[in-house]
Length: 404
Image (cartoon, rainbow, N blue to C red):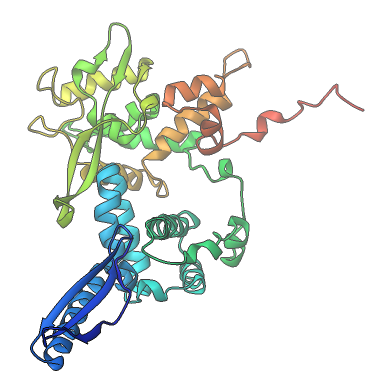
């Protein structure tokens, strides 16, 4: 609770001839308190009361979040409420959203003066600027959490987010002239021809036999295991059992901002930490292509069982930025349009669920639950909705014999 003045002060003449004064206020616990003053003259008592009230109000202004600029208050909330309870990668994204999408438009506005209309205009602005739905939704979620905290802590009297709803995705995309497609239709995968071209470029060599692309077999390994990039980079040689043809996902490599406490100091660094979710810790079987990729990666660099499989020339963990750059160079060399590293994981999942045609003409496929377990998803719905590009061609003729 915010402490506040209950009176502007009263001055009175005491029985001993001196002048007294009193100011009543409420403290942070809601208790009624008073501050007493005295002076030889009425003017002196009034002066002391005025000085005390001025100092009291300055203290309130300094601690009153409602009268701060949004950029200062939101940053305080991020550092005090968000930073201690989330992974640093999550905090980095929240701070980036505040810095890039919130502060430029609402940052210099006083918190208590911000209205629902201001927030709606902010969301509409970024929608009209062509930002993705997921990016604008991050703005909404961040502000919703921030204002909710201030309201519950009684730092503001009214939550402006109470009258703000996130724009419906269909309306959002329509305003941008885009079609609202099912999530599975937006999954990016490599088609059969692109896989062949990607592998050919990844394994290409110079006339002297040296490979054109460093760590190229790492991408083939990801294509055959469905590992996330961070999981692959964190994989140590001791996590791999070639005899049993399986590997253990235990950790992940993440990119985080360099910080001194909560303050970003510029640049990014690597952190080897826990997996994305508890279900991400898993055992992954190795097919023939994956086993061969591991063997060739060890031929390229091997510094012992406790060192990473995909390491740099000194046996250290590979920088994720360099890993992405090498991947994009392979795409460019193969003449394939830009696809994120996660497309390798999507391609793995899509092929397993849609199935692969066998020599006898049958389709061999895995169930969504099996693929979810391989990917480390908690439910098969996540796998089907966000990781698999549906192949409707396999439905051709499936209704033959079911004529009504």
